[in-house]
Amino acid sequence: MSELNFGKTITLKQASQMILATPQNRYLLQGEPGIGKSSLLKTLGASLPSHEIAYIDVPNMDLGDIAMPVINHETKTTAYYPNTRFKVHTGKPVITMLDEFTKGAEPVKNMLHPLLEVANPRLGDVSVHPDSIIFLTGNLGTDGVGDTLKAHSRNRIIPLTISKPDADQWIEWAINNDIAPEVIAWVKQFPHALASYTDPSQADNPYIYNPKKMQTAFVSPRSLERVSNIVKVRSQVDTDTLICAMTGAVGESASRDMQAYIEYSDQLPVWESVIKDPKNALVPDSAGASAIVVFGAIAKIDKTTITPFMTYLERFEPEWQACFAINVAKSPSKQSVAFSSAKFADWVQKNEDLL
Image (cartoon, rainbow, N blue to C red; front, top):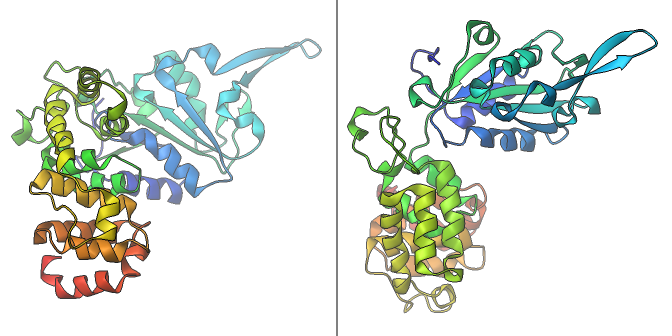
């Protein structure tokens, strides 16, 4: 599928804003595999809690999964009634995501076309609530994963090319979404793990998706979330199982390097000792372990622990102090916690040059 927007890209947040501002339009979110396009359904649902949610896995659908004919023997006519998964029978507005639409079979896409109409969108013979939101997702044509879109489909949608989040953007999201601090710390140290294959300088990057290479797994926002789930339960499995699972999630190169970060666990202080005795608690002597402590603290701090942690943090290198301050200030759930501490506010005032 060719890209239609002259190389311009936007973030998922920007795409969400556009969809909410113009719900009558039908947008196609296109981008590299695993960058979080499908997560937009959850984001939009949180913004519109009164709407029903319908996730439609287009490539795995047949015509009978969309609508079926129902015979009226009295009128000797047939009407097509949609599958309940589309939620149009509820009479409520629905947020519908046609996931991987560009990989669907042509007859399936054709049968879904009435949903894409601005005037009187319908499915089968049932009209869609006028306040409904319908959007599509797919990969770039250059991704080499079978995405196609014919002219009659293109004319019904507006493509938005979604940029792959860089390391800082992903970290900001990860801090607020229960991602293991070891994984966040690894991304902080290896930001090129979230580079894009479209950048010519990344041709030899061993971590990222590359359509020109044979890969069983690679690093993406999606695979990082999955490897985080694995890292969290590492104490429950043996080393071989852990390595096998991590490699399956993010690939051999990333798994190997991430394993090294996990080994920093021996250098990490116990959280309770940091809070009870911040002036004497163990301070890591490596960058990797320092990163794990900092990002772990962002997830843990509350109004009762922020002040002692700031005392502890003063024993770290300035770059890690700044890393903590910047990321906690960006976090919607932690901003009020940080600025409730006079010690944090004092640190910010004294270290403006680091920010």
